[in-house]
Length: 51
Image 1 (cartoon, one colour):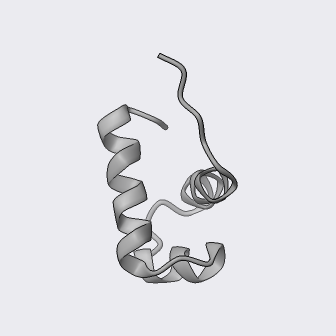
Image 2 (cartoon, rainbow, N blue to C red; image 1 turned 90 degrees about the vertical axis):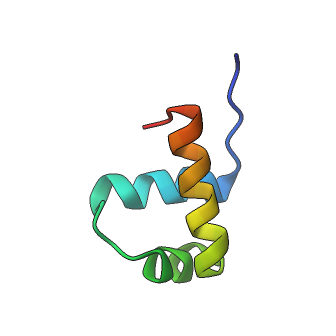
């Protein structure tokens, strides 16, 4: 299955690789999303086994 990431997904993955302990609120501020939207994208990464 081909996985398509948008620009915010790519930014989030990059930020998580730099600091996996950052809060969803901080990550969301950096990519222009709310805390809940950022958390949902992170959960999607886990479900799709993206790392």
